[in-house]
Image (tube, rainbow, N blue to C red; front, side, top):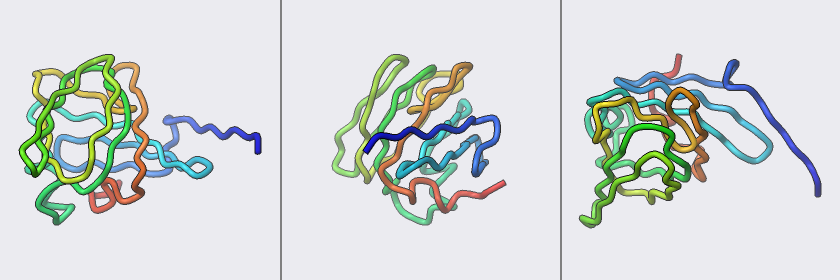
Amino acid sequence: MAGMSSKSFDTPDEARTPDKTKMEVLRLSGATVARIMFQPGWKWSECIKPVAGTDSCQARHVGTIVTGRLRVVHNDGTEGEVAPGDAYVIEPGHDAWVSAMTQWWRSSSKARKPSLEVSGSKQGYSAAKRT
């Protein structure tokens, strides 16, 4: 089945702004895409955990980094870091934080030319404050 859908982040379907976070969400045919920027000092366990209500992030993330660096530590102790130009998959059960003093545009979202974050889970940041 051929098809294509597109939307502009200029008019997102949803915007969320938890502490030190800006997230713009688009809903496309069978996919949810987000552009996300974390400010310096952002850490999941400090900025998102209070609204998510879980001990660690339970969303799966797939994307690319445009600017900044993100450090990730999983519940089992495995850890890693992603940097500009990296593509990544981050499985559920992790904490993460901006590890460079620059804004971080993520996965598929971040920076002056934000990339897009594609999440396999519609829950992702669903508990975060909506604007």
